[in-house]
Length: 235
Length: 291
Ligand SMILES: Nc1ncnc2c1ncn2[C@@H]1O[C@H](COP(=O)(O)OP(=O)(O)OP(=O)(O)O)[C@@H](O)[C@H]1O
Ligand SMILES: [Mg+2]
Image 1 (tube, chains in turn cyan, purple):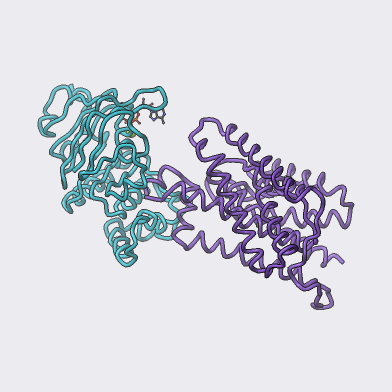
Image 2 (tube, rainbow over the protein chains, first blue to last red):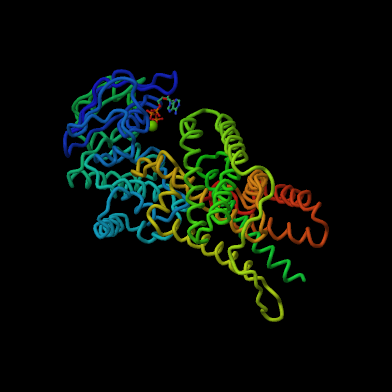
């Protein structure tokens, strides 16, 4: 459904991604792991249009989308939940969700979706009229995910959804990611929590210094010595 | 006497608020000092003057057409002078083009209308009514009403309309807004357009209540908008209102009770004192209250 072929991305003169290729099928969940500064967030931003690749091709459902403006890419069906949440702090929880559905016109269905996410994330329902900036980090993360889903994407890009969360919340977030996958949404999951990410996915890519080092079966990666050493902190 | 001065002060304050909204909103979104703001609204006000005084158009239509012309000019300035520079590293660069745009508009307007003071027709009947023994001019009442309706209406639009909420989100975080599918360029054009429209409304109301207009009011308008925005907290809609009110009231009180030549120095004294106490302005903060 999404095919990335040999993209290069740079910020000004700083080259970040070089010759990255990647693929994900409909309904699939794929992990992307790598150390800090490897270029994972830049990779997601290149897909969602926040940065343009200097070279390469990105195809989403038979449409070439490299260099297309982000607001058009959401329309095509890709939602990007950015690293660090980026909720609209001065807007209420409810407004954040409504803005997540900005591209949609089906008012009744939007309302239903909001109620649905209030069921999945009860704390958001309780705080619906509170400013998003006053939510705790974990609550903001849930809001950011729910807001991304409000666009009813076919492909969800999640950038470190469990960052900075207490262990029980991490489990909660992973449980919800599993649910979303069961609903048939394709998910690219960027995670520092490598063990959990490899357990929830079938396939994974490992990125270092802007290149894909290897990719393959998540189970095999968990067993791989290099992965165990570099990402699981085992010797 | 005092009551009348206060009433005029509130009216002028409401007009200043109108003029400040657009300026402050643009700053809220783009962090850009829009030097062309005053010149845009004087252009629109001069268009209104011509439509009223030369073509004797229906006042309502004249004001509407003038407001739209100012709005379009503001959006055009953004398109030509600012848009391509948005990604530029230094905000200084777009400030320089803003200054350039201001000069172009000011000088073209001067070619067309000259630089003398023109007599602007009244919009409302030249009468006054007596309320509890106080004489109030009809113009002041109407002017205040129009300003209040526009400001309240705009506030409701921002709070409850989808496009209004989109404006608020863009002013908070442009990249994330684009991820939501909000068309950034179009939203920014709308903000400039509305800023121009409100500015022209303020300019027309002001000129009509003093029956005077001249090109030089443009630069003054930019200064007023800047001062009011900074006093209230730049980027904040509530701040624009409070700043405009403080400025309008203080100017009138000072003119009447001290001397009109002390108007500007004392106004700036107020600005500096407020900034010393609250460097971000009355409602300004990095997190809350911004448009
Ligand atoms: N806007 C930017 N301008 C310049 N350089 C940037 C910018 N954003 C990221 N970089 C650089 O690009 C490289 C990759 O950054 P990126 O955020 O994609 O890494 P990451 O894999 O997501 O890291 P982390 O795990 O810490 O989130 C880093 O060296 C970073 O300093
Ligand atoms: Mg990252």
